[in-house]
Length: 310
Image (cartoon, rainbow, N blue to C red; front, side, top):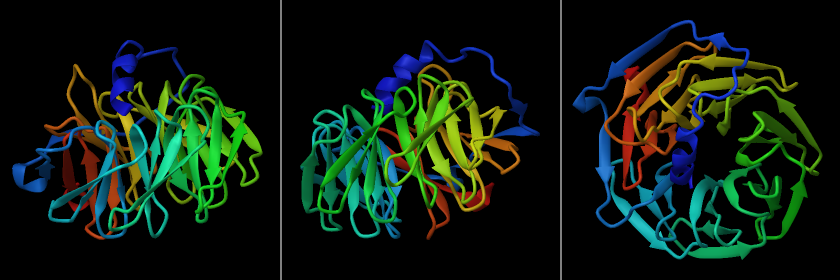
């Protein structure tokens, strides 16, 4: 689904102007061959999202209803049998979960690949996150979120901003990034919602840095949002950021443009950016806290990027 939105976003890359802070400094680098490692699958295509389980990386594979576990050395094991169209993946401390947009479902996957699918989320769920007890999905078509207990009991709350594409947890509340009205929505555990407008154009992803939320915006920017909804937008990422992740100190975006170059961008807390060109087309990004590496999912491959190199 991230891939489908790339085509839509190309026609709308630079929308209405917004008040922003320019990044203090932007540099662009090309990685040396020994500074990154790409592992390619010959059997799986559609690696659309990536997440870390404390040891291994996992991808959600939208094209064949499967997930792939990747060891730190790139050994891949694929398990089939998720719901239809797994587009996002998250870890609950024990199991992986995918959100499956075609049949409005989530799938719980044990470390050995045993799967249980629960149906009944809101319409067109595109993202999933863990709140320490339950899973939550962001549902694009009916502007809602769905809370899912470990046993698959679901409660859907409506009223987010328009077209929530991503969801993240801040330690107390869930937050969605809402694509069509340049906003984020904070959701309490009981479903009470507050929407704050003013992100960069077309926010595609959201992540938490321990204090603030950050969105990746398709107009080559990121927005930092305080707990009270105050926003600062920094322009200057690589072309068309589609995902965002936190490495414990800095934010990183995966930048995927079907016409221009693909890259990842590191953003300091003050908005200083370093963009690194890579040969793959990253659709998602996640942090491996054990290996201290960022990983991207690139359709039929994953790329491991050492944080210390930058």
